[in-house]
Length: 221
Image (cartoon, rainbow, N blue to C red):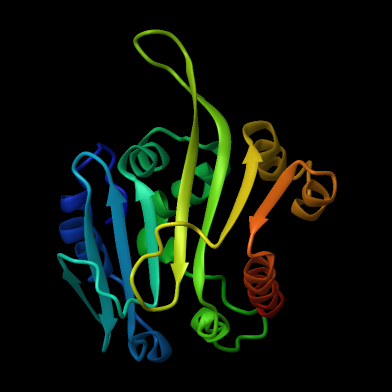
C-alpha cells in the first residue's frame, strides 16, 4: 500500500495506522532488520500530537508520546504537514512526496550502490551530531476564501537525544522562486548560498557537518 493515502487523514490515523500498515509490507534486508532507531514526531496545531516510532528487530512500534531518547525528531505544523502531503506545497518537496506516494516505504530507501555493495548507513554519519535544524521556504502562496495569501512553510529536524529544543540551532531559508529553481536544476544550492539567495542563520557548523554527511552518502550511493 502507499504510505500516503489519496485523501487526507488526521495525524493520529496517519502515524498510528497508515505508517505501521505500510511498514508491515516492506521486506527488510539483514542490515535494515538489525536497526534499532527511534524517530520522534511532533506535529503542532489543531489535531496535532507527539509520537515515537521505534524500529527494532525488523518491527515498528508506535508510542503515543515523543520520548527523549529518540535519535531523530521531526517537528512541523499540522498545516504544513498536510500541505506537503496532499496539496503539493511547497513544490520543492512535491517530487519526493509523489515518489513515496507511488512506491510506499520503498520510496524512502536510498538507491543501492551500483557495485552491488550494501546501502550506506545514514545513521552512522549523524550519530555524533546534536541540534535542531529548521528549513523555511519563505513567502509561499496559497489560496484562501478571502483571496491569495502568503505564508512560510517550515520543517524542523532535531538530531540527537534529549528534549526538543524550543529554538532551532540553525535555520536554512530560501524563497519560493529559489526553491523552484533548485528543484528544476536551474540553481545549485551552493550557488544559491554564495549569491545570498539561500540564507543560513545560527550554528553554521552544524549545517556544514550535516551537508558533509549528505555528500558522503551521495558519493557512496
